[in-house]
Length: 315
Length: 315
Image (spheres, rainbow over the protein chains, first blue to last red):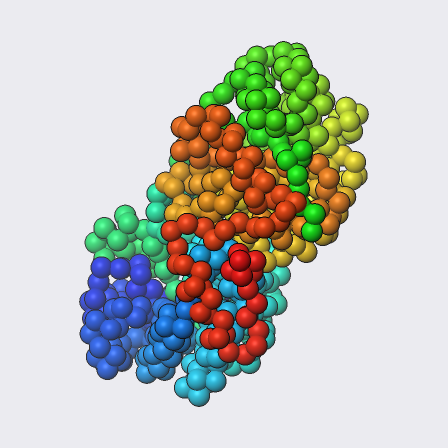
C-alpha cells in the first residue's frame, strides 16, 4: 500500500463555501494545495474568463466542476432549461480544463413516484449530452448520492447503479465519481469500484459523522472525525487505476464557520493521516470506548470468524 | 395483480407508540385490524403472560415481535448481555406466537470503523442464536435498515445483504424483513426480493416523506403521504410467495400526537388505497405540480425510452 500523497490533494470549494474563487485560490497557494474543485455559482460570480485566469495564474489544477445534472424535470420548459444548463456546464468545464463535470442526476419528478421513469430520464439526458461533451473533450462524472437523497436529489443511489449507467457510454466521455460520504456503507463498494476500472473520474473524501444534523446535507466531517475507514476505499480506487486528484469536500456548518486557514491546515493534516503514504491509519476516533475494552471482544467471538482486528483496533 | 386485502393488515405498535398493549389491542378490535406487531418494552410493561392473554382474548394475531439484534457490542460483558437479551427475545416471540422476531443487527462497534468486523459479528451472533430459535420454533427476520443508519443501528444496509446473510442459515429459522421505508430506493430491490423467495418473514410498510425531519428516525409517513410506489414492491413480495400479514409501522411525531382512533382509521384507509385489491394506486401526492404539467414531459423524452407513464401519472 503506497498511499496517496499531498501532491494529489484538491480542495473542493464547498469546503470553504463562504470564499470567492480568488480568495479560495489564494488559500490553496498559502497551503500548498495544488488543485481545486470549483462550483459553478462561484465561477459565475467572477465570470468564466476571470475564473480561468485566476486558477491559471495561481497554478491551480481544476480537478472538477460542480455540477451538472438535475435531469428529472417535468414539462418542456423545465426540461429545455435543464438541457441548456447542462450544455453551459460542459462548456464551462472545457474552458476551465476541469478533469470532470460532476453530475448530480436529480430525484423523482415533481409529483411522481416512478423511480424507473426518473432513471430512464437520467440515462436519456446523459445520452443526449454525451456527443456535446465528447466534442468539447469533457468527461462527465456520474455521482451516486447517498440513498437518503434518492427522492429529491439523485435517483442514482449506489455505486453499482452509477457504474451500470456509465458503462452504457464511451469510457472517454462518461465515468463515475467515488464520494466516500455517499457510498461508504455499501457492502458491494469494493467490488463495484473494481468494476469501474478505467471509469473513475473523481475521488472525493469526507467523513460520516454522528449524530446526523437537522439538515442532513451538512452532516459531513473532516477526515477522522467520523466512522469511515478510508484505507480500503482508497486502495480500491487506486487498484482501479485512478491516479487523479483527491478532493476534500465537506458540507458542515461548523467547518464553514471556522477560519479558512485553519480549515485548510486541517484538511492537509487529516488527508496525510487518512490517505498518506505512511499508512498509519487513523486513530480510534475520540470520545468512545478505550482500545482496551475493544480488545476484550476477541475471545468472545465464538466460531472462529469475526476475530480479526482492523488496523485501528490493533494500533 | 390481486392486491392485499385488509384481512392481512397488521398494526405495528410503534405507530401508536403512546398506547399500552391492552389499549392498542382494543384499538385494533374497534377498527377490525386482525393482527398486531408488538414491541418488547410494551410487552414487558404488563408482563409476558398478560401480553399473551391480552392478544389471545382479543383474537389478535401477533405478526412480529420487535426486536432482537444489536449484536455488535464491544467487550465480554456487553456481548454476553446482548446474547442473553436475544435469547429472551426468542423466548418471548415463542410465547406470543409471533410470526417472526425482527432483528435490527447493530452498527459499527464502539470506537471502530471496521464494517467487515461488524458484519462478521452479526453473522456469528445469528449463527449462535439459530439453534435456540429452531428449538423454540421461532423464525428470525433480518431487517435491512436504510444506509443512513449503517453507522449506529444496522450494518446490514441493503436488501441484497440481508438476503445473502439469511441464505447462510436454514430457511425455516432465518428469513428477511422487507420494510419499504428502508429499501424503496434500491434499484436492485425487485431482484433481491425475488431472490428472497420463501425467506420473507415480514412485510412492513410506511412512506418516505420530505423533507427529512431533524430526527431522521421519525421521517416516516402514512401510506400516500410520501414518494414510495407500493405497487411494484408489494407485487414483488407477493410473487416471492409471502402470504403473511402486512404491518403498518410509522415513526412520526405528528402521527403519535394524533388521536389513536384517527390514526387507526387512516391506516386502514391508506392501506386499502395503496395495497388493496382494487389496485387503483395512489393519487399523485399533494402540493406538487398538477398532472397536466407532468404529462407534458412525454414528448420531450427524445430517444424512445423513458416515455412510459406510471399508473399515478396516467390516471
